[in-house]
Image (cartoon, rainbow, N blue to C red; front, side, top):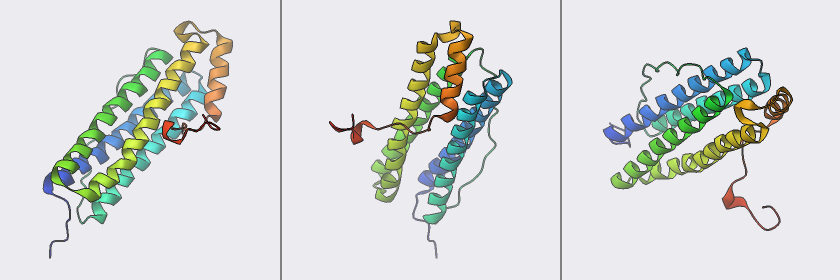
Length: 183
């Protein structure tokens, strides 16, 4: 008896997203290695933690496909991009990568809606929410670097930024959770 509750197209699309999340983990790992090599251990630690978070996202997709009776397929992962030329390029790369991932998540939500696959549509809502956090996190990185002076930042301001990101949580407050007492 066939117990797969996913269309063939949806199973492939979810599997593709699983692989995209694994690729994201590799991208952030490579950025972390670059930062570590440049002496930014705090920024590297931040990026390493973010790489692990992306890997965890891939596992969520894997488990969902398996739980719906499908079989996710691990594909070859493309190599990460070349090392960034600067911290600005690094943080902009993180942001661009998150925006691209958001687009992929939205495609899956749209596909679930078109197929009337309400279980997958519901599953994807967690990722819609997560991408709000991810894009906000990336924008905050770029903003913090701009405040520090961008690519012309002093050693002291970069040191402070590095130490701040070393201890910074990976999550950000969401607008949906804001109140008058907790803006």
